[in-house]
Length: 219
Image (cartoon, rainbow, N blue to C red):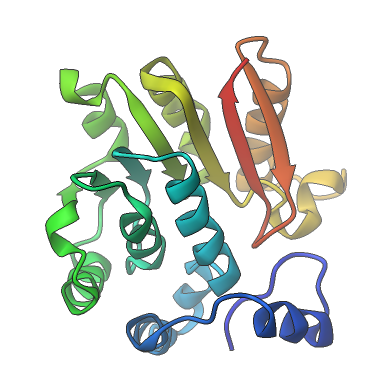
């Protein structure tokens, strides 16, 4: 079963899915292939979140996009499909195995030529970006939670006017609002959420889709 958006029971999730553009054959194949990974499959975004990313990419007219945390490539496929003509997506991940699944399905979807994958620690990739990434139209962060603040601080100065940073898992199954939950990832997400909320450089909103998706742009 595909992951549900936070707060939706099975019946309402089914209703949302029935009234959202459905995954195509390649996306369904990628969902099924990722499910074979077992518990790790929980890192894949929900299908409605993928469609949301495609629409957001299209609406922003994005030509330069960056993704931090690619996993098996569903979110990258979604973003790549929404890019304006000539647009490019840079993906950052540390896993050769998971991104091999991504590459296979990007080829199947006909978007591989729009995507550059760099397998290395994301913070190193971001700090080494050249001048071609000084006007990022869309960024998507969905990686190690304790690195979120650093990724955000590297990306925000490079954000183009009107650009958007999207950050996944910011509700963390509701744990961020439960003071009894104090594990390292939950605390890291709280620090990130508090940092962004207090940042007078930006405007932001947490959208309760997937596991919570924060949209951030310059104030």
